[in-house]
Length: 192
Image 1 (cartoon, rainbow, N blue to C red):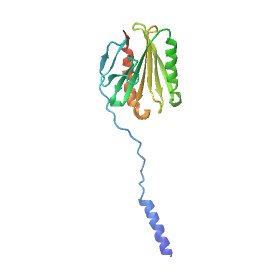
Image 2 (image 1 turned 90 degrees about the vertical axis):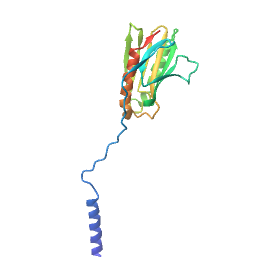
Image 3 (image 1 turned 180 degrees about the vertical axis):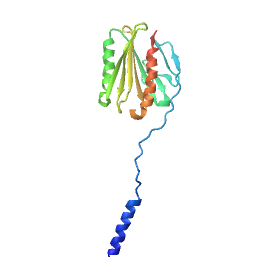
Image 4 (image 1 turned 60 degrees about the vertical axis):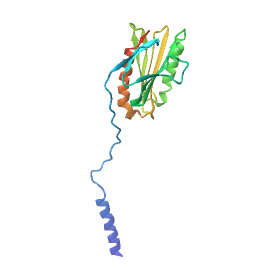
């Protein structure tokens, strides 16, 4: 009986000593490598009441969900599964309502946001005034939005959305890349 107990004890001790590596550490979760395209831009200058330059890796299409809004467009970025939704409104004494609507849409992101940073957009020469919103947070559906107006006749709002589950930790390089292009859109934005 003692031989059996001794044999089992030695067997378990041997398995415990030889089954583990001394320097084991778990591997961190990794993400796929994302190849980012070169920066180049295309002019969006049509019969619309506004124009701007957008990145060459994107394409413009009408907003099929709002066929009665002829100046609403979507800037599709298929490589990143992202869409920048543009909506246009004619200002006719209702600018305060449009500003409030934009503010409301951004505040709906608060439950999922860690922070929301806003930046003024003021260019008196081009008559472009507005705000941009950078939304920080792992579950925030729209990481960047902006609106611009000439304060008297025109109002444009744009919001960036990804066609994936919002995991902004893994999307962060793409978000940073696209935000630079969105800043370029704002800098080249003009009324017609």
